[in-house]
Image 1 (cartoon, rainbow, N blue to C red):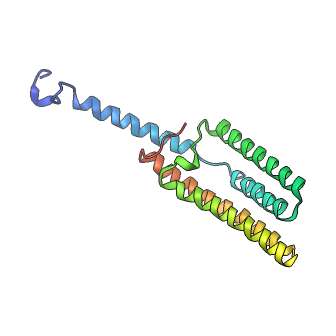
Image 2 (tube, rainbow, N blue to C red):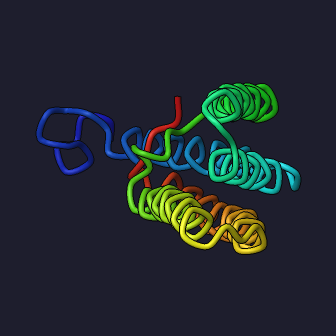
Image 3 (cartoon, one colour):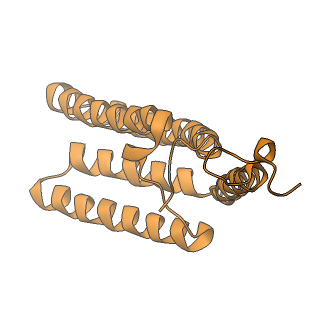
Length: 164
């Protein structure tokens, strides 16, 4: 019977409605997570931008350093815009729940590689270590970026992160 107190919550609402609402929220989370499939070219492009920045900064003078910095940020803006256009959403790596650690790892690896490249080049004058570090940055961006993506999708499904 509809008015039977045993079939309603203390506030008079129907528990079936609440379950359906929660199921709809879960379905929406899963849908957003499914849309966040990064294109195959995204992380290699990010890695190439970071590697080019490393080489330009480590080997260049002030004008080259400023130029590679501007190109780097323009490239990042372009990647973010393309990602948003393709998926319809964006999640900051700094607010991605447990996935944030992968974004931080990418940033730390990149900064350490740039500092190491500058130090090695200044101390030895050798060019090849700079190129090796740049190649390592490219690979790291691809590997860590893909791990970030997997973890982010998991966090979205579990409701720990919100896409914007």
